Each structure stands twice: as C-alpha cells, then as structure tokens.
Length: 297
Image (cartoon, rainbow, N blue to C red):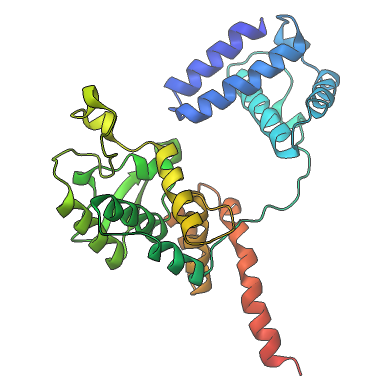
C-alpha cells in the first residue's frame, strides 16, 4: 500500500481515535512530511527497509538538525509503523528503529531570591499589574503549562478550596492546587475587572474595537503570557531566559527540595512517565552537598 494514503489515515486515526492534541498532530504531520520529502516518491510501505531508515538518519543529520529533533522524527516514524502493524499492514517492525543516545537533559530553575524579585517587579497600581501578578503566582503555585493557564476560566477555578481540575497533554485530567497567596491575588484581580467574561486572564482590549466584547478574542494567548513573564523577568534584572516553563521547573524543584516524593511530583505535573519527572532529581545534589559538608571531615 502507498505511503501517502497511509500517512493520511494515520493522522486521522491520531486525531479521532487517539484524540491527540493539535500540537502533536502538527508535529506528526511535519515530521512524516519530511520523511515523504526524503523518499521523493510515493512508495509502498513494504519498501521501507532498515537500510532506507539508515539513509534517512543520515539525511536528517545533514539537515543540521539537533540530536533531539532527529529523534523526534524517528519517534513519529515509529508511531506510524506501529499503527501499520496494528492494522496488519506489512511494514518494517517499529522496534527495529533505535533512537540515538542524547545528553542527559537538565533544566533551568529560579532561586527563591530570583522568584521574590520576579514577583516584586510587578506594579500593582494598575489593574493590569494585578493580572500579571496573578499570572506569575498561578504559574509558580501550580506548575501549570502555559497552554493550561491560557485555557483557564473563572468558573473553573475554586478560590475557596484553592484547587481545580485541568486537562493536560492527551486530555488527561489532574487536580492542581493554589497557594493562599496565589488565590488572594486572583481574587484581587477579579475585583478590579469590570467585565463578566469567563476567561480567567484577558487582554486589555485595546486595538480590538470589533472584538472587544468577544470573550475568546479577549483571552490571553500563550505568546502574550510568555511575553508578560519575560518582561517581568527583565524588569527584575534576572539574566536567565525565563519562560512560563521555567516557573513550572522551579515549582517542581521546590517541591522536591522540601521533601516531596517524586511520584507525587509526577502526578502534580501531569507527567505520564516517571522518567520525565526524573529530570528534576539533579537538584538533590544540593542535599548531597549538605550531607558531604556535615559528615566529611
């Protein structure tokens, strides 16, 4: 069977049967599209051999792609081959494609002093300051992904119980918890709002005359949230690259430093695999140093 039609079938299967996120679908489409470009013609999937895969790996390397990006292409290809196998379509076994070894991933986090400076950088003399402070506090208090924060609605967030449910990657539900400080600043932000729109975080509406009353057009985008975080980090004099995900990393690190077990952190972050959460265990080096200083003479 020809590869073009089967890739289209696979993408539709991922969208409908597996309910993959829009981002995942876009990635699969892009990565498999590059494989089709490499093939140059619409071949039968039975013609995909290990030798052809080796040639493809060389092709990816010569595109000056990073090692992780090369692996993402191979992961997408393995998912496609797994789909073929599941549907009894003769093709290369997905497990025959091995991923390249990559350097162990590390993450950038903010120190407590940097977190304090970041929060202090917000001027709350205007309503927009309460919004920005609420965004920063919520990100650090919950470890939410920026896409999850963007999608929050007023009626979703229980400020009294200081907890609510979100759906993360793969539409997987999880409970997240707000600190008292975060809940209080959200309450203050709600008090200075002069609208009844459901999105929790909205833009000022300036320059959007036609859409100023459309709640979804007023919902802050992920790009806008990233810009807000970056601007306050610069204002605070933090030289690190600070993104919403930096606050997520800092949240997880703070939990582990204070004694939280890694399984609980995994659940609170919404990671499907403990392996993903283990990138944060590098912070235990601080505890090892304390032990070294205490017991080494």
